[in-house]
Image (cartoon, rainbow, N blue to C red):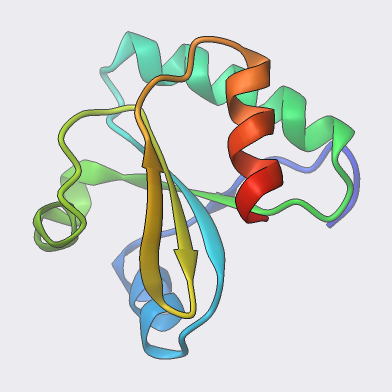
Length: 108
C-alpha cells in the first residue's frame, strides 16, 4: 500500500474472507452518524499517510450485526486487530493520532 492511501472498504464478504482464510487484518468499526467515528477516521487516515504498507479496513457496524455480537463490539469507534483469523485486541478510545499509532504499531 502506498503512502497517502485511504482505508480499505470492507463489507460482510471481505470480513468473512479474512476470518475463513485466517488472515491478519486491522479493522475500524464505525457507524455513519457517529461524530466520534468521523474524527477517529481522520486520525487513522493521518497515520496511514505516514506509514507505508499499513492497511486498515473500515466496516460499517450496521451491516454486520452478527459479527458485532461475536466480536463483542460495545461501542464505536473501535479499532480491532485480527491475527490468524481471530480477534486479539480492541481499542475504543481514539482520542489522538498517537492512540492510533500505538495500536497499529503493536498489531500491524
